[in-house]
Length: 80
Image 1 (tube, helix red, strand yellow):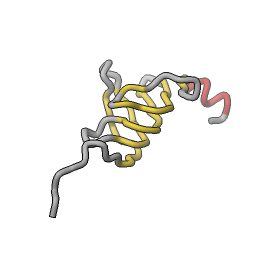
Image 2 (cartoon, rainbow, N blue to C red):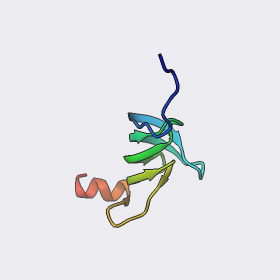
Image 3 (cartoon, rainbow, N blue to C red):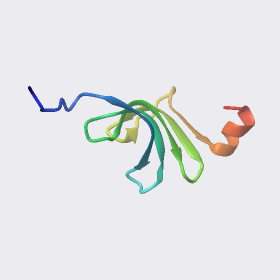
Image 4 (cartoon, rainbow, N blue to C red):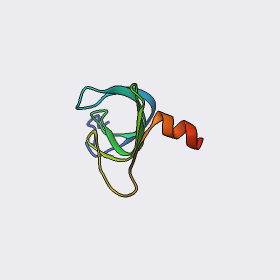
């Protein structure tokens, strides 16, 4: 049996507690890599109210037109 992990393998998590590179904590739902860093499509709900959604690369949100950063207040008003 081969116990070595593929570093490119992705796993899906739901509500994983995570602290980003800036030291901001919250819960992440989506794809993670072998190191349990957000990697792939996912959404991070920070404890201070920001919601970051889109494609992640090794724990960093890739900024693009389809990636969104919204505040909790804005998401409540829109019903998201």
